[in-house]
Amino acid sequence: MRGLVIASLVIACGRSEAPPPVVVVADAARAPDAAVADTTSTASPVWKPGPAVVVETRVDGAALRARHKARLAADRSPVTVLADGSPLELGEKLCEAVVPKRPAGTKVLIKPNLGGFDWFKDPKQHGGDNGVAGRTTDPEFVRGVIRCLKVRGHKAITIADGFTGKAADWTRLAKVSGYAAMAAEEGVTLVAIDDDGVFDVEGDQPGKPLGIRGIEDTSVPTLLVAKLVAEHLQDGLYISIPKLKAHRFAVFSLGIKAMQGTVMYSDSAPAFRQKWRSHRELDKVLAAIKSGDPKARKAYVSALEKFAERMVDVLELEAPDVVLLEGTPAMGGDGFQRLVPSAEHVAIGGTNVVLVDRVGAEFLGLWNNDALARELGGHETSPLLEVAAKRFGIALDHVKLAGNGAALLDQPRPATLVAMAGFELAPMTKELHAAKGHVTIDGTVDDAWARAKPLKFTTDWAGRATPIVTTVRALWSEQGLAFLWELEGTSLHTDQTRPVAEERIDLHEEDCVELFLAPDPAKRTSYFELEVGPYGHFFDLAVDRATRKRDNAWSGALEIGTTRDPERRRAVIEFAVAAPEVLATLAAGSKLPIGLYRMEGAKKRSYLAAFPTYTPKPSFHVPAAFGQLILDP
Image (tube, rainbow, N blue to C red; front, side, top):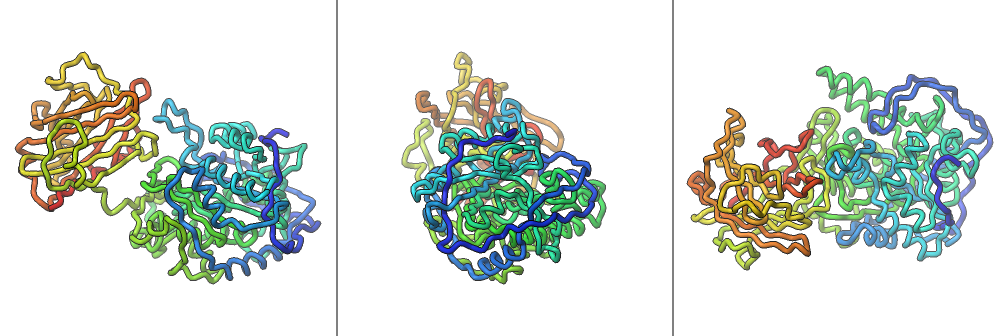
């Protein structure tokens, strides 16, 4: 056994009546095709064609298609949206709410997003980012589902996802992601849905590719299905647990897109490295985009539509019994390199994957999105969802909701999508509201701040989620602008021997908060920069990016108050700005470009941003990324 398999238990959630068997003996079909790189996820290497895959058994695809089409067409059960709680708690509660009750002897397959990441990164060189977290399903959420199933008496539980790397890389992924430890602690099996003599050559061969009959009229006539998946489709319970996230090619990666993890094709060997064939047109499209071909966008949309047809063909064959979306947090951005976490933590689930994807898309702001339609030739959401709804005759305008998080969808959700086609969608507003009022600057959170709406952020400059929490409030009056910063997880990295009454030109090298404010919304490249540390050190200057000039002599006329709680790693930074140039801008209804940032840590520096700049290296001087400071009446 060369892959990673961790002690197994068998778990069950079966049907009251066993479905007809789906495995029969036959030969596998194959068809030649040129190999290219997997451009959806650079985790997959370029693969050159090899010998054709030959297997001894086939799956009755016609029977599976008929069963799944009938079930999805008829299932209109509510989609449950849960909010509040840890990933573990939400996973357990969502399982209790929506996973079908099956006999305790039923074996269970749990398929998270485990292979869908960009590739490993050194956290020391990437601000704590290991390249995996935020792209893959949180293992603690899956742990919650497993514990729910154990309470029901299930014992045969397998966690598995498709992978395209080497066996050693799979082992590394299991360790880095936390799945190896979690699976061992819970006593369940963890395997890769890959075989061909690569991962499992001596054991049960869970990834052994089986041929499929009855799919000649589909867009995936050479599709193979892993033995593990076929067995659970036949008489087990198949639970899909994708990460709730946007996706640079597919618009979003939810239940339908997650089918790509199970895909294998018989066109060449090894079959599990043929996943790129699902989007085989994409390499040429990306080359056209890079060259500036005016027809590139149309070709991109066409490639996405073909990918959608193929994924829905796979869905017809391998539809999971239940889909649980892990959004703790959900991720906007591109799904790989640029991640924008949601403010809320949610879990969304149901037994109809199409309806679950519809609700997940709405939570991401990528449902009925006019801006998206302008970029994708009329598609107001991902073509994957549109094709699936049409295929199964599912109306998506009105979906029944349940759960304490359903109210999160009462208002339109903001969308953040970074597409590989050369366009981005960002929330309509990035705002900090300043309430009208005056406050005494003393470094304490007094009653005057209760009227100011807080803005909380945990993202770094690249939009990645961090465990470091920053909360900002603002007040305005004729006397000036006041800001309250509440810092959590602070190291208080400050040279306290330096006087606080003198400007610290190198303050950015220590812990501090930074506020950029443009007095003229029409000229946001000209702004003031104010830096304040947790002990009251400060530095202020005027910056003009257009002329590349900076005026260190400019004064914000700052009044500063700070307090600290080293044991709890917390600090409060409060300051007021009374510079004449700022006072001249203060009027009810004014909207001023603003940037809110924080520098944190000594050896391991964190560059935090309320409105991420998405620069290759940490940089806050990106006026185009500024949000708005809105002065409320």
